[in-house]
Image 1: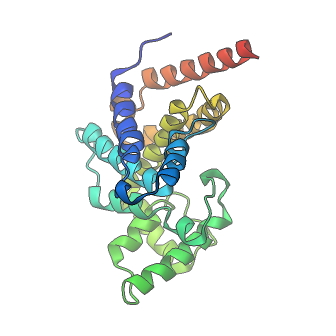
Image 2: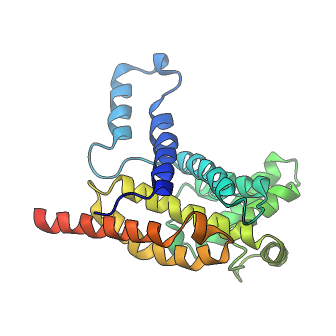
Length: 244
């Protein structure tokens, strides 16, 4: 087995802290009944299958990872941290409003439904007018594809974002795909099919976006890192076959 590249070790350590250690620390615990606390701890630890990942934890982990990316790539490209972090914070806002978690690669028409729900909520929160920066940050996640079913106003903003903030849009995509990869790697023993599926599906997407983001294939998603994840996925599948 190939040794783990240093940048992967750093990514995993950061991810484990934001995804696991901070999530394990329950606030106001002294007010929680013992039987409820025991259930929460069992669910949180994910004693069978895949551990739980609330959308809020996903957003926090992704935000920490974006900060790490910006630092890694600063020699090659200047990224708008505020725009990116606002995108991370609000990109799944519509899922919470609609009460559903739709897998990113299956969304299609769900995207515009989430956009409309999010804008309705934002207008209620912000006295009828969505702040321009938050509006642009939310749309950043869609600007590379600029879906045709979005309202014309949103499509015009996405077209502008695609011209001016294309690197930020690529950075968001790379960060999210890597977060999927790290989550599935963490659960590779209990859910090996998940890890194999993410490697097969999301790594080609990384190989699409990473070369378009200056410095990414040098400082982050390198050939060595890609080869290591592929080797880990293959080893995981061999263990499954041997166990079967």
